[in-house]
Amino acid sequence: MRFGFFDSEGLQGDLVKLQDKSAEIFALLAGVLMIVLGFSDFFVGLSSFIVIVKLSFAIPFLTGYWAMRRWGWHQQIIQVMLFLGLLIAAINYPNNEGFRGPTLYTIFIFSAVTAILIRGWQRFFWLGFTFLLYSLLFYGEVSGWYVVDSQYSSLENLFWDHWITILWCGLFVFLGIYVLLKNYSIQNEALLKVQKEKDEALKKLEDLNLKKNQLLALLSHDLKSPVAVLQSTLEMVDQGLFDQDEVNLILGDLKNQSVHLNRILNNTLGWVMAEMDGTKAQKSPINVHELTEEIVDAMRVPAHRKGQQIVLQKLGEDMVCDLEVNEVKIILKNLLDNAVKFTPTGENIEVKAQVSKEKIEWRIFNPGHPIPENLHGDIFEFKVKSSLGTRSEKGTGLGLPLCKKIADQLELSLGFEVDSDAGNIFFLEKDLSS
Image 1 (cartoon, helix red, strand yellow):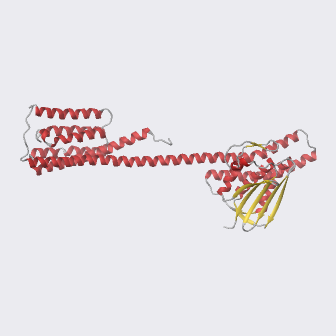
Image 2 (tube, rainbow, N blue to C red):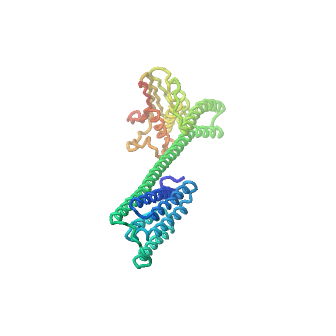
Image 3 (tube, rainbow, N blue to C red):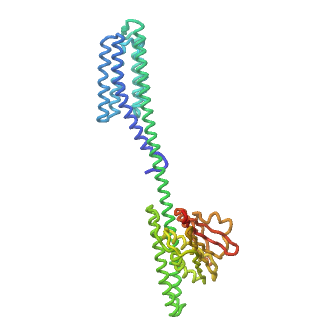
C-alpha cells in the first residue's frame, strides 16, 4: 500500500474504466441519434431510402451497447462502430446534398469520439482515416467524380434538416462530454476520498508507532532502576563486603523490595498492554494512604543505597477513593525514582499525601539542585535528554513526559514548582469535586 500520493497504476486503471463507461454511453447515444435523425428526415420530406438507412444503422450501435455491457471488449466494439459510422456517412453523403448537406457536422463527432474513447496509437489512425475519407468525398464531388442529386424540395427543407442535425449533433457532443466530465468528477472525488483514508491510516499508523515507542520506553525505564539496584547489591555481596548478618538483612530487604516492585512493574506492564490495545483505564476503589505507602516502600532500598530517607506524611482523611490505580502508581513511582536520582546523598526526600473529599494531592520534595529556568518548558516534552543524577545515574528524560501523557489522559494535574528552600517540588492532583 502506498501513502501520501496517488498510485499511477491505479489512476491508469481508473482512466480505462472511465473510457469504457463513456464508450457504452456513446454507443447508446449514437443509436438513439440515428433513430431521431431518421424520423426527422422523414418529417422533413427526404427520401425513404435515407430514412431507412439511418434507422437501420441504429441497430448495430444499440447492439454494440448491449455487447459492451454484457461482455466488455469496449475498444474492439467502439472501433467497429466508428467504422460503421464512417460507412454510413460515406453512403449517405451523395444522397444528403453532399458538402451542402449536414453530413459535414459528423466529422466533429467522430473527431471527439476518437480523441476521448480510443486508446494508444489507434486514435491517430482513426483521426487520420476520418479526415482522409471526408477529404476524398468532398474532393470527389467538386471534381465531378460522381453526381450529387438534390434531395430537398425547398430551401426551407434544407434549413430544417441542417437545424435538426446541428441540434442533435450538438446535444450528442454535449451529453457525451458532460457524462465524461461527470464520471471523471465522481472518480476524482472517489480518489480524493481514498487518498484521505490513506492519509488518515498513515496518521493512525504513525501515532500507533509513536505510542508503542513511548510505552516500551516507559516499561524499560521502570525496569532499569530496580534491575540496577539488584545487580549492584549482588555484586557487593559477591565481593564479600558484608558479613552474614548484613547479608541476611539485605536479602530480607530485597525480598520485600521485589514484592513491591513486582506489583508496580505488573501494573506498568498491564497499563502498557492496555494502551497498545486502546483499552480505557479502569478505576477501582483503594485506600489513598495505603497506595502511597506501597510506592514509598518500593523506593526505600534505592534511596537507602544513597544514604537517603523517604519521609512520608499522610495528611487529611484516611479514605477509599475510586482511582485509576495502575496509572497513579506508575506516575508516583517515576516521580520518586527521579527524586532519588537527583537528590544529593544523605538528604531526605519528603512525600506528602493530602486527602480530602474535594481533592487528592501528592507532593514530592526533591532537595537537589533547582531545575534551570531554561529547561522548565521542556520537562514534560518528548525529547531524549540524557541527564546525570547525583551519582552519575544516567537518565533518558522520557519518564516525566510519559507520566504527563498518562496524567493528561486521566485528567490529572501533574506539574512542578521550584522553591529556593525546598528545591524541586513535583505534584500530582486528582479533583474529586466533579
